[in-house]
Amino acid sequence: MSSTPIPTSGRNPHITPRQKAREIAFQFLYRYDHEVPASQVFDEFTKHAEHFDCPPESFDFAARLAETTIKQLTMIDEMIQKYAQNWRLERIGAVDKSILRMGIAELLFFKDVPASVTLNELVELSKDFGEAETPAFINGILDPVSREPLALAGKVPSAT
Image (tube, rainbow, N blue to C red):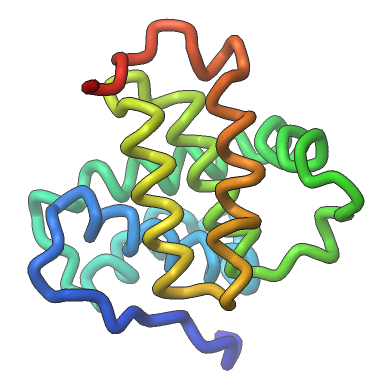
């Protein structure tokens, strides 16, 4: 196993189950990008979730988010390339890329989560794990993705 450190958060311990699920899924996707062979994704995710004390109420959402992101990675990376003007995918930092990938998966394939919730949660996650400019970068890509036809189709509307 690689010595790539997994990012950890100084986030408030009183986060919601979905916030915890996103944090666990992000950490796994960061790790997956560095060291997890595709054939071992489910087993490795389960070990990862146990290691980070993923509560049972967060596990299913986290697992679904990580699995969807990995299964749709080609389409997701194409979407990043479309909106990350003047940035090649390989130049985007691992933290930013993992957050973007997960956010796009949630925007496109999780119809039960309003886009505004996804945007807010991923920007908050990027504040915990990214650099100072990460939240603006994440928002600058996820916001237009949220208006893509695939993201809008069947999406639960945001509360006003």
